[in-house]
Image (tube, rainbow, N blue to C red):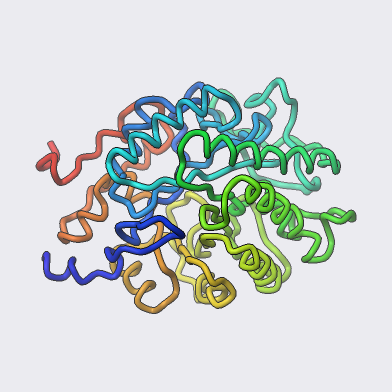
Length: 372
């Protein structure tokens, strides 16, 4: 009942740099493919505004350059029209008293030339055999094309793309940015030795493999102060066939280097969840437990949490805040439901990635009365 809700640590306010967040129930970055021309619309603004009760909203992965796009219908942040679209979103969220960070995304090899025909095929740090499939422009799953191996110039350009994305996010009124360093996309492809086979200064040793991530972070820090910058990592993630020969050494070094830069937060995906997949594996490894001691800022954890497991993670000191994905899709007023102990709407997986408002902006809030 109400009594239990008022005592939840999850619902206690917290500071994120100079931002006063109303709770520790964060909205995870969620690809929804609802921006057909890659520009956020009024419908996208409504979707985020409905969820402004989150302590922090982290937007869906937002593409920093056309070459960085891996899916149809994913919004970008590399032109003026997109800046304008995101301005509508941030105004809608701020009008409801919410806070919103943008997730900056480049997919690297997890892409298809039909999604960026003018730019040609995908780019990656190395060519490695893969069974991973990607969507083409017609939303059909097809095998990944062999990527072009990035030159030093390509790397410099990608770093500039992150900086420009960060600058455009600032122009659009976002409260901060999160670099997407997880789930086998570009930054992760440099980090993990299953995918990084380079022999130059970006490959080989852990220091070298972390270099691209740090260059991207440092570029973003020329635009935003550190207290407005976070990063998402998946230390034990296997999504998109990722893996590393020594994840503890790799991510300990990466997180220690990020800590030196005073970032607002590190956002860790727990290994029991594989990408956007359904299964929650019971694994003994806790990414938050492994790495929290290396980072002085906020640690956010994500991965198949319920109200009670999230509360337990915060009480155990494993994390300062918890991201919710699928439950936030189906429950726009999730923190209010946690507070009152109200039942949760069930999510409909079949509309996660379909166009239009169904399964996007039509999940009821408690204030709407009982669902029809």
